[in-house]
Image 1 (cartoon, helix red, strand yellow):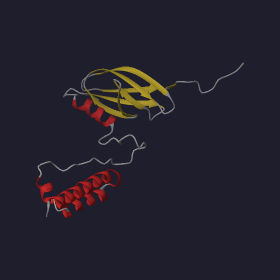
Image 2: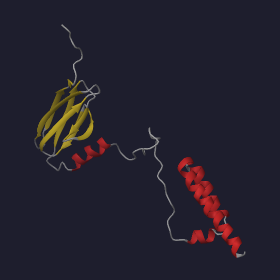
Image 3: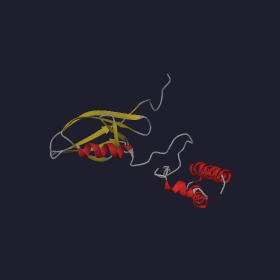
Image 4: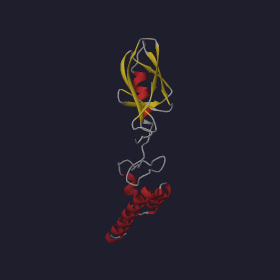
Length: 170
């Protein structure tokens, strides 16, 4: 094959790979198959396959993002990670904290880190903790709690509404 024929094949290969990569973002596995087919059918695929660069891997989100501009978060939820960090740092003299709210189902923040919703039993290192709870209707409550070694502390927080439910006019 002449110089021009080789240039034409290389240009065709590069175009096919570029289109495949662009399509990969939009069409997932289908576009990847097109790009792989272009590599196999290209005359210059021997040079491309002998390169030492690793294959390009794009992460695809598990579920679609509510916004086209934001990537969906992958991995465990933030509250699960925070809760596990507290448990891993608890040590052998860990205490337990049973957290409840009235009404139930409030988000719980321990030292300003989201750890879950009420009711929740947590394993923590002995010490002092700031507990904040936020309900679904702007209710909130907070308390500072001391956790003793190898003991279970029960905390019930009555959530107060941020704004009054009704206004009386005289």
